[in-house]
Amino acid sequence: MIWDIQHECMDREQLQSLQLLRLKETVHRVYEHVPYYRRLFDEHGIRPADVQSLEDVSMLPFTTKTALRDNYPYGLFAMPMNKIVRLHASSGTTGKPTVVGYSQRDLDTWSDLVARVACQAGVTADDVVQITFGYGLFTGAFGLHYGLEKVGATIVPASVGNTERQIMLMQDFNTTALVGTPSYCLHLAEAAVEMGIDPASLNIRVGLYGSEAWTESMRNELEKAWGAKATDNFGLSEIMGPGVAGECTVESGLHINEDHFLVEVIDPETGKPLDYGEEGELVITTLTKEALPIIRYRTRDITVLNPEKCACGRTTARMRKVMGRTDDMLIISGVNVFPSQIETVLMDIDGTTPHYKIIVDKKGYLDYLEVQVELTDEMFTGAFRDLEALERRIKERMRSVLQINAKVRLLEPRSLERSTGKVKRVFDYRQEK
Ligand code: DLL
Image: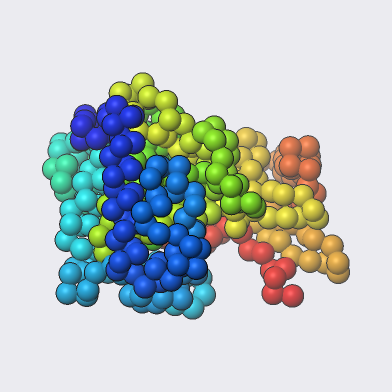
């Protein structure tokens, strides 16, 4: 089912005129109501009336996470606090979180856009959906909660943690759809096995996974484990939370809710806009946000845009699955490598699991990379000779595919700590030295 045929299947020319109208409104709005943007525009000699076409967006300055931090907590809000009905925040790795605010209309839009994403993944009013994101300041749980409720699904707000209870709820409540981070939902499958329950024998038929990068190999693992389709959805708190884009069942990119978000892909080095089909950093301008409109937000997420109509009938542009961010690229002895590439190498080799850790450090002046990976039960209990061969194979693949030398440590199954939210797999100690 398509939640909003009118907007999801709009003729692209019509869509673009709607976007332009909304872009102009947004530019005026931030200029009039957000002193930070007024100052920035003035500094750049830009007047809101200068924006006359969608391409003109490229004359506007970028917004980065720093702007939100510097204006902590409410400095970028375009409405007085008595019109703000909800706050969320993303936990920064250091210091203060980034705070985002919503008006009542923003919340209505948000649940509507998440409803689109849920329908794209194939969720209906017949589904019982277990939400395993943590309920709190994080946008994931509440965002999906209200969107799924709008679709009419039965929500089980299980929140995160208490893993055995999660499995019991799935069994007793007959959960048919699972929502969470891919890493935590894989952990849930593993926990079911430990409880003597085959996760595929439960009634889960679809998973809505998001909030962190996950590879196609991880998708295979999740689909195998749960015997359920694994779909991807993307969003970020600064822009709204979940509901920015989601995968339909055709699975060839994530449909962007373009009537609410104007997207560009830029060269992260030069800031220059790139064409459709070219890989770069995703930049988003909100088109309808009242409380916290954002101009050209640099997401740091790397993707490619495809404006072609999808086989599902939707006309909204699709973004390629995000597998990395400009700030998670590792430079190891001069070679650029993304953690997702290491994951793909590991998962293409039999005997390993998606539970791994990447450690980067310095030994003297030289970079040092260690990859720790848990083995499958079968591999672990197998012959020592096979373990040696496996270690060699991983090293060789890392060298031939990624041009890097790595020390490989094979670990006992279930020995790495499991995460309940976004998984942290990379530990780069070089900056600390
Ligand atoms: O993670 C919002 C969200 C919640 C999306 C639930 C989907 C489901 P933040 O905590 O602000 O918001 O983190 C945003 O997470 O810039 C990406 O780097 C990453 N991210 C989010 N979804 C995906 C995804 C939420 N599907 C940051 N694939 C983003 C890859 C993702 N990365």
